[in-house]
Length: 507
Image 1 (cartoon, rainbow, N blue to C red):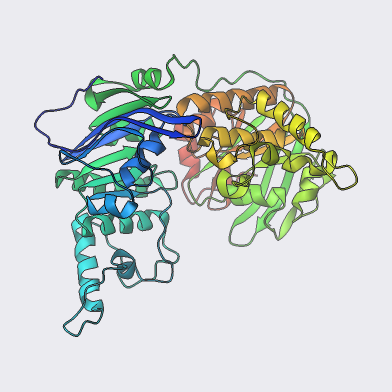
Image 2: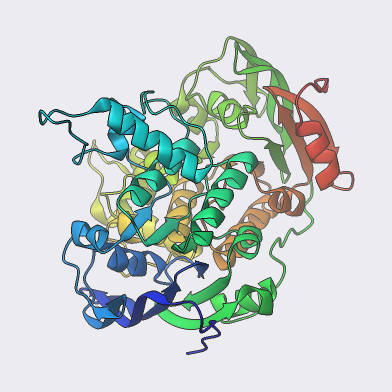
């Protein structure tokens, strides 16, 4: 083990040589990490490296089969999440689970509300204590407002307030910034630094290296279920961390090969939905990757969903291969040759309880069925072909897709749509939540698809991805397209300038 930690910060939690298996699958063969008071510690690794299993052991969700688990120097064996929380460990997940019908204060103190002399719940004390917690965190949130409708960023702050209200000494932030805007990330990082300065130990998990190097004091790398190394952030760099994560040098992260651009496949004219997007004109040609960029809330996903027929629109038209596409009918879009990889693969792209095989074959039900029955052999053959083409890592095509890593789940979604042999592929945030090694594989696949003549409309919030993969970049702001940039003219400055509000729509 390569430990480069300072000696003056006390270790609050230590996990050493933890092992966890699920039947024949070894999820963790050497889970090791030390979390120190007054330090932000980043945990990085490819999907499937064992990060989630390690976090669930800390949280009391899983119990290790072997290894040493220490809290404040004492050996522990949590059997429940409640035992972990009682020991001062709290996990802040990417998507918090607040009770929407309760107020902010009620969510913070649910199950342990302060009482008055008569034994009744004291709402005034609860409100006052919630206000004090937010003051301590340096944020402004109304304790009396309903949790329903709160942004993900505010929900995470409430979860942090809940954690410090029970004197949590260790906070685990698992991909907390995936759905946040830049300003919300800055606020969250400010809270994290304030907690660190007050002596909390923070474990920060993220695939975004710029965030890791901006926030963390130390970085631990995992690969294939094993501990690889721990470094002081100031004494390493992104290239070294990537090499340790994947066990090899990553070549070009954006392997964009030149492609022959053909005739228009998708033509959108005057697409409008009141209050959401207005007068959208765009064209995507065969073999072309068109990147759709913009700030959160610009309307990119809404336009894609309208094109595919999931969401309605008020006026305008969509043509595929020159033929007018009926609005509001995804089945017609599929028959016209459109594949749609949604932003939320778990909720919208996959049926998590079904097998890898069944998920891939979902879009082939009509073509595979014989007299209304799908022969299992035909389903297995079709799924196996595409799983092999995309190198989906699964112990068996019969296992539930929920057991796969995020990167492999994304490959299953892609396989499902590529099996339909589309002429147009719409991909919304194709590499969100995916590790750097799998990102390179997804980018290479998109480049290969474009080389085969498939038209690709790619929505991404990551500027390097937009710049690295797009033949042309469309920028949206406030529901309008404000720039149409060729690859040679696209730059971070040009895109951000067009993404800011109050720009004229490109005609």
